[in-house]
Length: 356
Image (cartoon, rainbow, N blue to C red; front, top):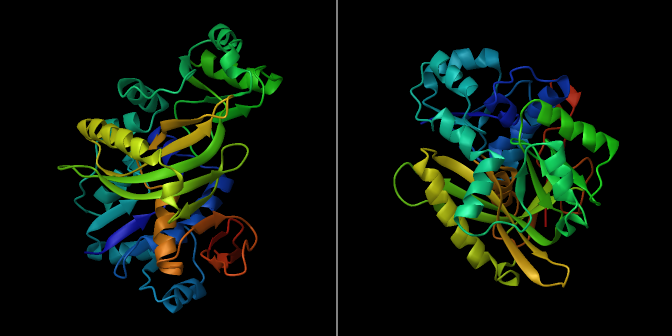
């Protein structure tokens, strides 16, 4: 049954009903969409906002991969009768509207469940309920409450402040101290004036971060899809995922998986089903003791870590420590480029690579 894959990577914005995208975000989505090929099947179609160079599909075939076809919006109308399923990055009303336009009967999780599950309040609520809340993690509702919180010794080494919704470092601030800069003060004040809640947590000293991938069915037990090592830049933006890591280096994963499985069961009760990624961390405290944060961020959608698992199985099947990285240069001598050379006749700036 052919499925149509859609790279709505600005998922959180769509979820909140924001339909206008900047030209930068539009270009980012166009350049990243072909990477969905790693998850698709040969009979599937990938909806591309801009034309993908033909050499990319040939390259996938040369890797021994039964590559899907890349189609434009114009070609989509010609193929509408052949499509039986939609596979979006994440479920939004815009995706449901497209399904209706294409006359495809889809089973999708309710909007309310998707919205709630992807919120910061959900991960905080579940952390409290499952007795694994990060010390110092809290909600703040005003500037006075924020400044009072930051005066605590918990935040002496820095803090992370997040909006209700965000992705890959967007919608958050990271600071190395507990004083608000002028820009940080303005950022927080604007959100409080708009009636928003912010989520405050101490800056941690990580040993390793994990992007743990789950599949939540409508019926039955949630299933573990895979474990990746999650790598981020200084501002929290995703840079790469490493697959098939040496798990015995992190005995804490047993507890993390246990808590995340409990969280998955709770999320399933909301009506959400489909792919989900839950970030976690092993970190060290001021005394160099290893600590665990099982529920860092919850993403009820596809994730870069899940795509990394797919790319690793294509580029380096059976190999250990395979990394799928986002960057503008070759990162290793054996790196395989997993992006097209051009999109819409222009060179791809947001390039991706797979290497060991």
